[in-house]
Length: 239
Image 1 (cartoon, rainbow, N blue to C red):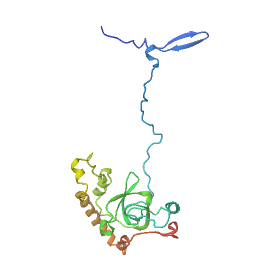
Image 2: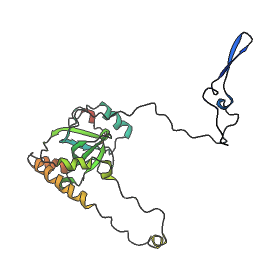
Image 3: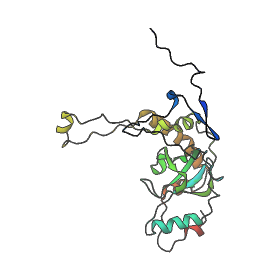
Image 4: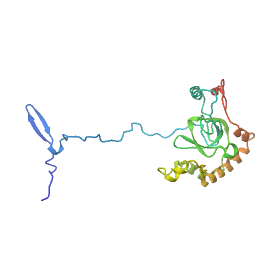
């Protein structure tokens, strides 16, 4: 014999009179369970804020020279105050920028394109100051009033470098093998640079350097590093 469950009509709650009022009594199969699981069931956290697209300053346009900001004696708090007081409306692509920290702090670079995740795609170019194609946070750069036109930069390379997977590193193998344990004292093997990225860097540098050489003293400007000392007021400077 097959077990047939109650029909839809049987599952309907019943209404009974109690004194002067009425009470709705659900079917036994629809009542809440008397028991509960010993462990809490994990539920995903509901995000109350919806993700909004990144809004960049109007000055962040391709071709703007940016400065990767560096501090020598100024405290980080004082520097944040100075940056807050500065007028950032002059930032555009292909303008030189400054960065607050990092390996290339104080370098003057060229903005190629703003990305969708709040970062900027920049280049030194590499032959000028050693800064390769990389991403930087848009908050930690200062745009200068200098801009150059970049009509010959390959748009396909910019599009490819805008993908998140372009800058991801290969994950090391999980766990440590016995062979790796005995190689700890040996000289580390030099990491090989991705040939595709080297070729992309060469093509971008070629187009950018053509535009840089058209501007007088711009090459030496990109060679030099930017820095601040005590007494400097960056919010009053004209970059």
